[in-house]
Amino acid sequence: MLENRINKELLKQRLHIEPFKRHTLSFYRYVSIENPLEFRDRLFREWAELNCFGRIYVAREGINAQMSVPEHHLEQFLIRLNALPELAAVPVKHALVDNGKSFYKLTIKVRPKIVADGLDHGSYDLSKVGKHLTALEFHELAGQPGTLIIDMRNHYESEIGRFENAVCPDADTFKDAIQMVIRDFEPQKDKKILLYCTGGIRCEKASSFLLHNGFKDVSQLYGGIIEYAQQINQLGLPSKFTGKNFVFDERLGETVDGQVISHCHQCGKAADTHVNCANNDCHLLFIQCDECAAKYENCCSAECCAINKLPIETRRGLRVSHQLKYSGSKIYKSKLSPFLLNKSREAGQAEALHG
Image (tube, rainbow, N blue to C red; front, side, top):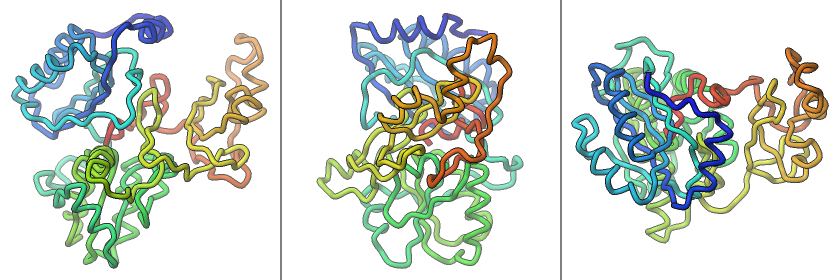
């Protein structure tokens, strides 16, 4: 199979000395792809030729992509993208905050679904989705009494940034979140419901499943938080999204309004920087301030800090317990969050690339 087998550290070194700029962008489309593997290989050849990086998922139901494209190849990339029948005129979203270092290699994987929803095939009709709202329409409706705003992202995403008065399910995965919403808001099926997520991909499925389960008035923020932030800024309106937008790449987040609404999981100080524990036998995703990063040497606990100082042959096989991880702070329920596979960032979370 076509893939990049060069050492990760070497790839990162090459990225940081590149003499040109890169642009981080994302797109998705639910579209029938008859042969996902052939489609995947075609994309890999074309995009590798343009020195593109990124993490892309392809399935029979469509494509979900977040990419880093060299500035001097951006126009050619968009031309080639539009030339593909499956992706002609696909909406492309550009990062809010972009240092060009979001990805260090090109990874394209074939998956059963581009959004892992845990639902049986045919259990809902994806051709019937909620009403697409522009950023301005969502902004205006979000302030109306009686409107229910639901965040369809995971708890570690909404913890650092969310819309005012939004309900944020305490879910580790999208498939958990969608079931929680159906269960918890069943008595409010007749209410006006506004859904949002990072880029829109999760809301497509969520709105469809809600309608299938009898919810009457379901709308979704088209283009997600990314599109909202860009449009509201252009219109000169005060943002109703507060904090940082979590992203599934090397940046881990991009600020929307400059506010910090979350706290360090170790000391409780205001902080919104997600990191992975430096102890690779843990690699927990958590929020850490600069002071605690220095104190614990980029680890999530004194226990992991001590383990990380041991020789590799000594600590091999050691495991750590996180049951009493953060006194007085939100505790992550899983030692390895869904963010963390293949460098611990993919298990079951293809939907969250920009969704």
